[in-house]
Amino acid sequence: MFNPTRLTARLAAFPDLLEVLVADTDDAEWRWKPDDRHWSITEILGHLLREEREDFRTRLRLTLESPAMPWPPIDPEGDVARHRDINADPAQTLAAFRAERADSIAWLRSLDAPDWNAEHAHPKLGLFRAGDLLAAWADHDALHARQLVKRRHQLIVRDAGPYPCRYAGEWTA
Image (cartoon, rainbow, N blue to C red; front, side):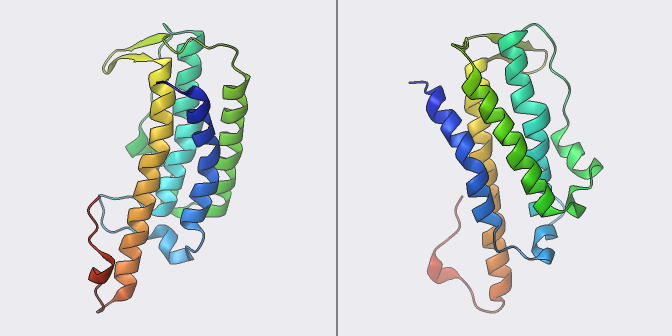
């Protein structure tokens, strides 16, 4: 059963989880990447900030208020490089994300009986209902939390050096 109140609560809780996931990160670790195909922690944070400002809240609002209006274009992969997120100040990015998320939560909680079945026809991806976007927004947080936990795991394995972490179990996610 669709539960927008619970999804909104999960969105509201995410900034605290995000802060905990990166709390003990030192300067070099913010920018460490396991390889060129994966993002650093600062790049993940920059992506989350832009998604908050330019993607989920914007697209959900348009779907609820003007479903026929085209969504503004986004380029998540390209934006990370273009904005040089790897060099960003993590504390500033986290603070900006927290402020944007607070605005998003205030907006979501201000909605009066939204039509979660309102549909937007994306020219490439097909139909999206407002409820689809709210659910995906909350799941996007979870997917990036998983990404941050994996980065943490990779840093631990790196720091363990010659001492394997096999006693902890296998990373399977």
